[in-house]
Image (cartoon, rainbow, N blue to C red; front, side, top):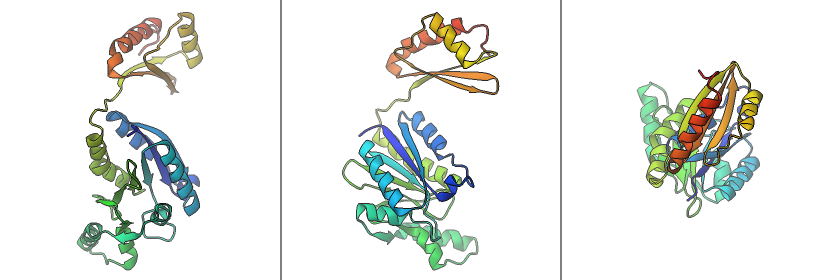
Amino acid sequence: MKTDLELVSIGSELLSGRTLNRHAQTLGAALTAIGLRLSRDTTIPDEIEIIQAVVREAFERVDIVVVSGGLGPTSDDITRDALAGLFGCRIVTSPTALNALHKRLNDRGRTVTPAAERMALILEGAETLLNSVGAAPGERFSPESGKILFILPGPPAEFVAVLNDHVIPYLKDQFKEAVPLELRVLIVEGIGEADIVTRLEEAEFQCLEASIGFYPGSGKVEIRLTAPREQLAALNDAERTLRKLLHDCLI
């Protein structure tokens, strides 16, 4: 199974500017920490045909796709309908999710309405991933052998809860051999990206076994070096060389 994952963020509010979407940042950091990689984040509106097309295309590139949003009780929450249509399965009530929903709302003195019960619906054959901070559960579904679809709620706190409680533990178990990249970080100030690159080119600096990235902001530039653990010696050499070349502007 490939170690790259894709994220599909669903919600017209994400595209209208009303809601800031940080799911890619959250998921990317969590995957990097366990040696996996978020290779693409696609944000799309609440439209069935678009959801189906984007998820179908994602599975042509990777084996694991994470979908977020559109699991609430309102008419525009159509993620389940779109995915059920795509994979040719029914939508059913999860007894586990329904019981959790009743307990959650009853504990808060709220009435459990038919609209609220829609949040306990899942794809037939999916595993319920209980949501510890919200009503709608997440799901883990296998549309075909070797493919995994995670369906997560959209609200940030709920996305993080299901991700940390269920998705990351599952992935860690499935990818026991995955190893996080080694990381080295240098921060410089008083010199811009173009000047940094000029210094490196003049010194004929090469970083063949490691990847280098430049992240400017607030008068500083963060330089990040990453490499697999087996290239640790080369990574350390690259860091030492950079520190010598940029010694006068390091902080």
